[in-house]
Length: 262
Image (cartoon, rainbow, N blue to C red; front, side, top):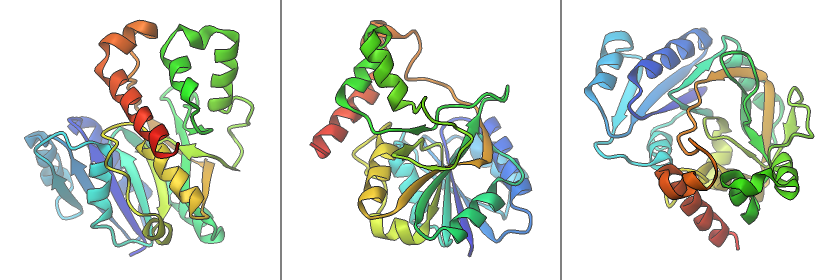
């Protein structure tokens, strides 16, 4: 098996259908398998797979809201491919994206993880490659401190604003919405850390890939559309910190991360 594709889903059956259809178009001629891992599973998700993708997609369901790392790990436990693509259900693949990522990985044996360029539906580039967090970065992102001169400088570095995002580059970490992984590297590094319910599991995983001697690559030659809902940042500033539960989850995950790597 050349490629295993893991699609994580949380109550987005319509987006899931579009994602799976795009995989079908991008995967023409390739040897691959697909696992949909459904959190707080709904009948609508099962109906989509039965009606449109019967026989080509395997469904793994969790009755509870399992958390992102647990979903990914459930798919990884089933994957048989030489390479593994981890996707959120809100991704739409360009037709040549799988082929381009496979070609790059097969020509670059030190690359353990690769991330495509993520685009909004108006064609603008989303932030998907980053430098590692510093403790203050979370506060700069969550509060008015991000509008200070020091905060702006910190965030510009974190978001790699000094880098041409049309260039292939080894970077610190990639957004977990789309990760193309060498199975050999995964076997050395191990699964995602399930102590993170949501957020920072991708940062942590990339850090472990680096520590194991594998490159983490931003690869803009492969592109995907991403329907990106910023649930962890709604109104912005101090109000989010006090009233948005996803902001609290983000901060809690950050504390776990910094404690782990203290």
